Image (cartoon, helix red, strand yellow):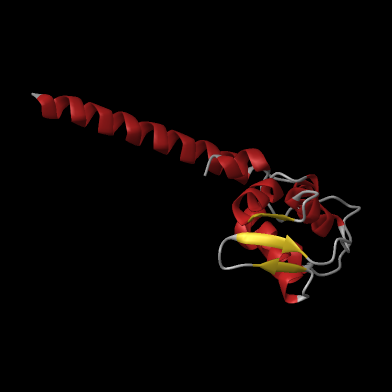
Length: 142
């Protein structure tokens, strides 16, 4: 009779998962009016990264871009070190801020801070306003 308890728990989990997935699909299917102020230029590299992997991908792209330009050092030990403390844009400045005044930090907290940074949220809001992305509330339910 113990299997009946497990079966009920599995059914409950399936119902909750299906409900969350249906709610996310309904939220994503809502017609969005594109912002008329959005210009018709192509996507930037950061916008393409956001569309392909969300805020986490944008954070990784900023770190890798700064590393390739030798503005950061990414060590195989999991630490990031600032080489050039001047950011070229808001995303780079948020990386430097997330690393801290010491100029060195583990990579994991920096990536976590970048996901919730204001420039990344603003980037997502611009894409939502242009009708290219779904709102953050719909993304979290998927």
